Image 1 (cartoon, rainbow, N blue to C red):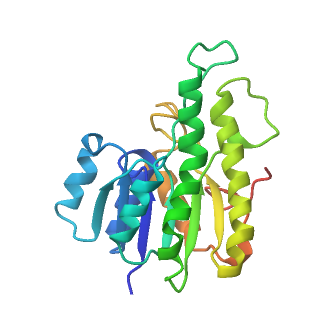
Image 2: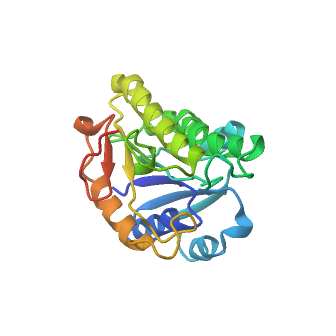
Length: 229
């Protein structure tokens, strides 16, 4: 029986690469993206692939996610991939203002919370449900960085949220983990990054297949090694 994957931020980067890999394997993808006008390649694929369904949704708006959950069948795997970088500089970065900081924290922290909360009912209908959050090693507490304050903070926070979910969802046997995707050639990672989105996505997908109850509440690198956070 084919598995069903729901991926947020599926219109570009790692999300799009994961979508392509999963579709090619004959599995079903429910792809969410905030702006359909920036999802040209994703929509083009959906025109020829019946196992891809695309929905417009902002992960910071719980009501949009709930409406989508009402219109779909069960989900086997939820991948919280949507995220933004926000201000990249140090403490004097003029873009580190209320509006931009709020957007980073709402998207990267509240976004996965609302997504999991909205679709947990569909996940619990699966015989083998799993949740993965695409986080970042930049969110670990031991680092030498002095930039991207709120991106780092948001990834630390979402890892903490992942642990809280792992405790609450343990009663339902729904494992949840976080993954560092590597330094990837995306809008965030830049063109000099060491991994292509396809290389990262292929490794992530391979690790996703191995996840079980023993992995819940943990943080992993894209190669499967565990990261202390």
